[in-house]
Image 1 (cartoon, rainbow, N blue to C red):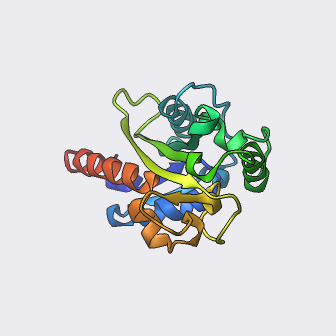
Image 2: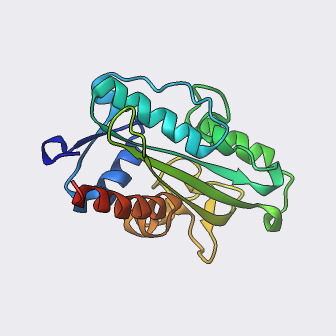
Length: 205
């Protein structure tokens, strides 16, 4: 990717993700633009893993824009639910579910589960492609362990953040300052790995 192609399309319309990723990638001087700006609809996420879905989204966005593309697929795995909602975290309550819909469905599913058994983790797979047919996409992954509380707390973050308390913390992610969340989170750590690989790639061109 040349200096003339500093724009990167984010294969998501999620404004929470856009804020987080823009802040984390600022040191590289990249301009991160959501795919909504190009009128792109998300493709069907037919993969069975987070990595597969991230690749589907990144290649789709790159094809539609002729720009480099960044995508992540992330979700929450709840042990008491056998790993659900997993890759369907954003669609847990239906294809057009809101964060609130998904959160309410999850809390209902966990209503009879004791606090000590509400262990869960966030997973994130992040992908960067320099073109639609990039033969060597950059891929990074990370997880974030924690437990789930019985009622939402906090107004920050998005998704399941209001009920997720990271291991060793007392606040939910939605109660944390954005800077602390970015330093600790699955997405922040996956992106740190991706950023290191991307820096190496850019330095070699």
